[in-house]
Amino acid sequence: NAGVTQTPKFRVLKTGQSMTLLCAQDMNHEYMYWYRQDPGMGLRLIHYSVGEGTTAKGEVPDGYNVSRLKKQNFLLGLESAAPSQTSVYFCASNPFRDSLGNIQYFGAGTRLSVL
Amino acid sequence: GESVGLHLPTLSVQEGDNSIINCAYSNSASDYFIWYKQESGKGPQFIIDIRSNMDKRQGQRVTVLLNKTVKHLTLQIAATQPGDSAVYFCAEIPGNTPLVFGKGTRLSVIA
Image (cartoon, rainbow over all chains, first blue to last red; front, side, top):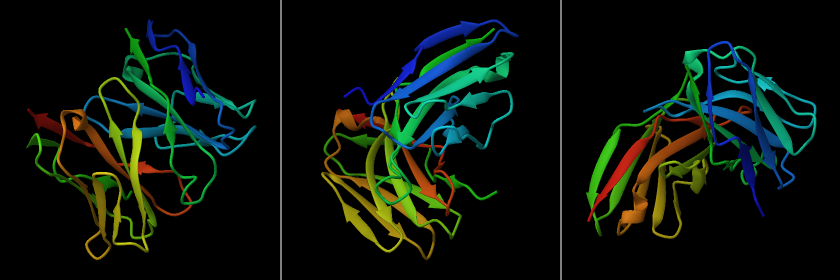
């Protein structure tokens, strides 16, 4: 059981380039999330999804777009990368919203550098 | 907006001693709390959770205490081991919204 898988693990972009980060989960979870983590900081929520075909903004959504076309996949897009988007990106999922389902399972992260 | 915070950003503990990691939360509507452990280069990993109708919950070597009066969480790690070295985050659920994470406390175990 792979859990939550993020690809790629590392990426370097030039300012203005675009890219898509892929998150895949094989646990049939309803909820999926994208976070960014900056040095010395906690996790900040970018966007999340409560089910296939749905997305919602989190705390820091500007400069990012997401799509959840399939239940198992949650894509994070950067249309025009900026140096301020240099960060480690984490994807997470959980089954549903009750006390057990709120435990989020995280991927290993994608380290993105924008030059 | 309301947020979760931590009292101590870094903590150094001798191997074998007990570790105490604190977390203050400000949203009185929060009814569920989770502690996560993040090792270097990895994603956060669930440690233990507690609901607002409980004061204490124990796991294997870990205990979480909840003081709703002062809006404070404590994570206790018994007999701290080198493998416990990591950053520990508390997170709260303030009602019908996603988890809100604190900034984290780095635990360093001295052998």
